[in-house]
Length: 215
Image 1 (cartoon, rainbow, N blue to C red):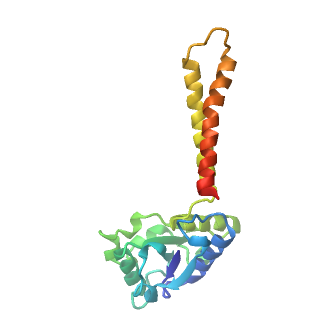
Image 2 (tube, one colour):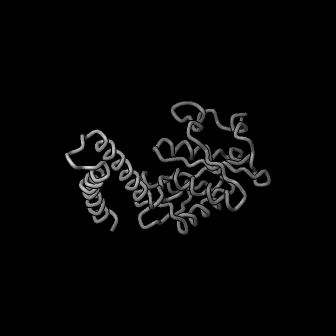
Image 3 (cartoon, rainbow, N blue to C red):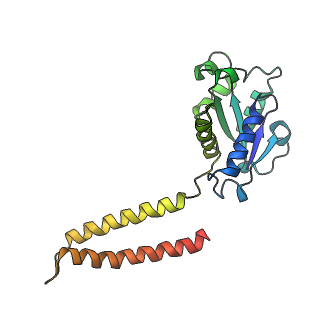
């Protein structure tokens, strides 16, 4: 994926580099987001003129109290152009006052160009990700930025399989309770036989899925 940054959006390039580093060192990227975990950064005004595949680009909008005050209105123009091309806007809202952090309501008080507040743009209908200053909270914020760009935890498939196995076990247990006992059969032996029958097929299915997708 390529992060697009407007040169007139003060501080945005630095945040994009932090996101890029988080993608390298974290466990956040899934193949559908960035092939081989590669995250590139480009200047938006140059890139938007020559884009071929819009789906692999995200415009990072770094929101501070200076966001819409660039002299030529370049930031607003590029945001509008990106939204016209259905490019995802990843809004990152600075929380540290000394770095330009301000209440989100500030952006509705005459700062944001009206065209971006109204349909079909409605920029703020999407959630902005708060960017905190403390290292531990900032790390979480950057992961949320990656998720906004389409990333998923690399172990999401494993968690899904565990959940599926648990739900399957619960359904088997319900079936066992409903089935009448056979002559000379205890409830425990019935449960073990049912689990061996159904659980084995589930494990075989899991191994097949892992061989197909996990290797």
